[in-house]
Every structure is written in structure tokens, then in C-alpha cells.
Image 1 (cartoon, one colour):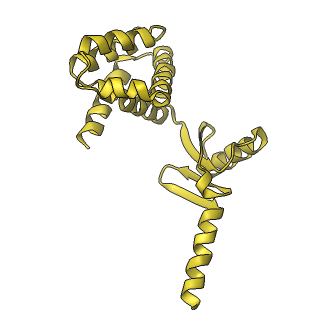
Image 2: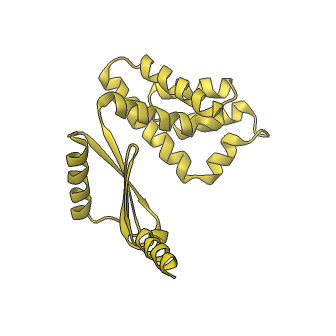
Image 3: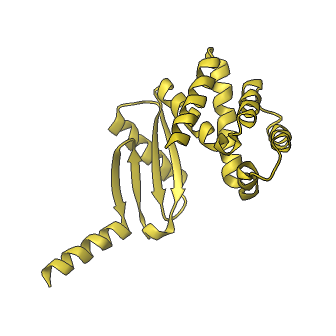
Length: 180
């Protein structure tokens, strides 16, 4: 839990540092890039969390990987390396994304399906989320989980709507077990 609180503090500090909207938006794009890059590379995750790899080597590697990012993002990387917190980079970037979206009034909805969403279906989901939240600013995160068999699971903040086949089968199984 302390890791999360520290990540929130770093993310808030970066958000406070970038006062104008253009810079905040630029760092938002950087943080999305940082988050997806780290998430996609198991090797990079291992490097960031390794106590064996020298801090300067980590800093050089990260600054090379993220050389096209803003100076603010590079400063964050340097601070995390100097404070021996490189393992938190992905978490800090995710927290920044959350805080930025919250500040901008963007509602983030996660939809989980067994197969990729078609563009048409994605538009329908976005329209439904806009209707449910009353917000015109909606961002959709899509996750594929074949274990749900079919249907979808929609999460918006604390709300969850589970229309998956796996959930329906589990409900039928419980009802069947009760009747025996």
C-alpha cells in the first residue's frame, strides 16, 4: 500500500508541476507511452525491479528508451532513479493518467470481452457509457479475457455490469445446485 501512496504523491507532484493545459496533455501522452511500454516488456520490468543493475545504468536505459518524451517526464525518471524507486515508474505513470483524467472530467470505462470489439460495437459501448455516466468525455479501455466465454463485463468506477456467458453459467449452476 505504501507503494501506491508514494506513486500517487509522485504523480500529483508531476501534475502540479505542469500548470498549463498543453504541457499537462503532453505529459499525459508521455505517461500513456511509458505505461504501455513497460507493460509490454517483461525484460524492462525485470530491469526496473532488479537490485543488481546499477542505478546509472537504469537511468541511461530509461532515458534512451524514452528519449522522445518531454523534459518533465525525463525529470520524473531521474528523480525516481535517484530515490531508488525505478520499480514504481509504471505505477506512477498509471496514477498520473488517472489523476489527469479525473481533473479533465474524463470517465474511464473498462470493457472486458472474450474477443476484440468491432468498431461498431465499440461505438455502442461508448454511447451506453455516456448515457450511464452523463459525461460526454469518456475513455474506453478494452481488455480481452477468453475465460468469460462470451458477452462482456463493463466497469465504470465502482459500478460493474457482468453480462458474460461465464457469469450466466455460474448463476445457472448455483440455481441448479439449490434445487437438488
